[in-house]
Length: 383
Image 1: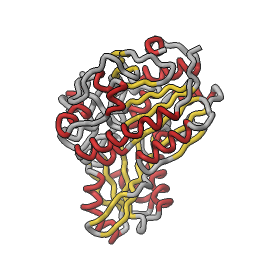
Image 2: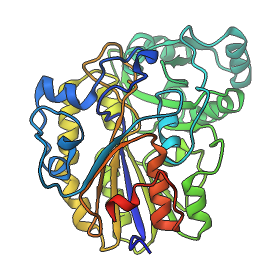
Image 3: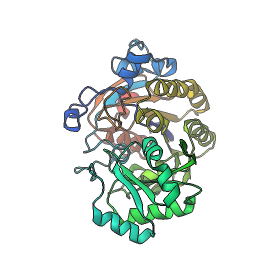
Image 4: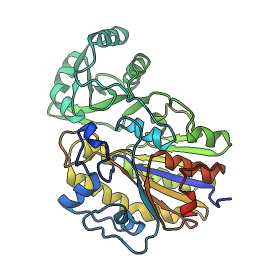
């Protein structure tokens, strides 16, 4: 018996902690999201520092501590790719031997023709682009013609941007469902926006349509054991809605933290799985280093609210899914290791070392909740 009956798993989207050994294969040699932010503008995160964040890897201003309040370590990604779906699936116990397809030159004509025929709307764009830049570039043409703005990135995504007054939200979601049925990309994403020429802004009505996981995840097994599996943010979307008993979408990190604490305050046992996306969406892709720093500091300021709400047999894991270094070239994700912080009243503050896969997180969660031991679990080091 591990004396843990609930795990709170919080993914700080894109908060990587240094380039991986295979980063050169992805053009990411030298990337370091946390390290470069601290080097460039400083980083004041006293609560994560006390937990041991500075013990994981060198971060300016976060000196290693002799005594920490949490267990700490880092993990490398085994799966091929560096996108949200790949990272979260590996955290949940699945590894991909082949990456999802990407379209650096835009989507083929036959795909676009079929999509236009099925939706009854024309399209514009169809290229790799930043989400904010492309609505600035093509927003006026979209408003004038009603044609859908299609774009992608270095990740396996088919993104559809549309003004909410031109294409109602339900209609945009229906177009995404059509694309999802057509394509084997990792995600189809609805990207609604509002505003007028020269002042277009994206709204919180984003919706991700992921492929259904290729195999059974830790959530499937926890749910099958009649325990609760509560999703916060875009988590349910990332897994095609499978494996959850409860789910709530959120508009930003602050609401994500609020909803996580609300779940903690219930008596439900099992898993609370939260994604906080603002780091990636608002600051990583936009290469906004000061904004990224502020976002990290805002999370750290609210971390005591999470820990104080936790019950005796709760375990908190704070981690990430990939990097998105705001100092690095380009605007895409970076192939990086992820930090792991593990906190709880029954958790020993130990160094869990370098983990050879994100799946070690799933193995540990299943070990404590399902008594399902695995060689790659780090349970013995912390309990």
